Length: 310
Image (tube, rainbow, N blue to C red; front, top):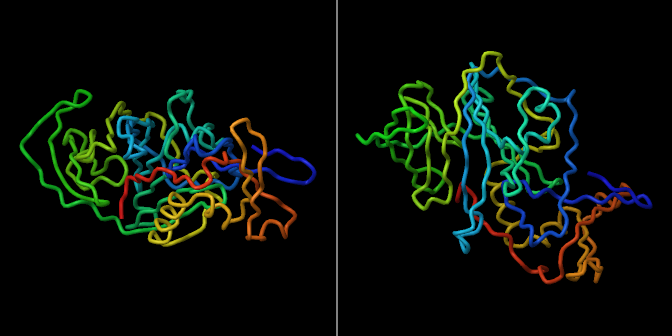
């Protein structure tokens, strides 16, 4: 969303990024991701669609406050795509390909990252955004956890599932997979078992995935790179994670460093002060990027509990 006034463009970064922009930190949140259907790439066609609910803890200091999202795993002939259903609804190319849009519940924020496995071949490509000006794309080798399969069995969505445990992303996971669906995949970066993972959670239960739907697609659904990622720039995974942590530890200075000026406001939304960005990249183009923050949150950190730890 854009607002024009006296040649100034006001941009506010989105609350729906994976990095959990806090509503108490930001007074205003808007999308400004340039979306262009013509620039959307189709990579494959999905023959199987898996829907998961996700319950997760954004703030380890408030573990009883649970956030929610709905995730989709598309499985094609060549690759898989894992994304937030509600975030992808905001992309017109996606809504055109999915005739069953669901309204986002009021208590759902959504994680913005998207993961393509075997894209390019043998690799994993991850897209994520810290702000509208900081959208990342990194590639990594596909490394599945070293799973230990137990003899325990449970029913998930009517399918008999076998328990397995493993470690990845500095978290210990318990998963339940079903050999009845012989697809070596699952939510997030979890895979490598002789069957589809229908339930998964880390042992602290900060991230809990539960399958809520399995559909053999009669009409194949395109697997696309949404236009919302058009502005992503390539980076190493290490660089991305470093910036992610830097933003959460010191969000105001991070925003200042990438080109945002900060409007400090009191609780009545009255402007108290403007902190000018030292980054003149956009100013030299005649653009001013502003975001409003309550003055009491000037030195407040953003909760940091990413699914993948260091």
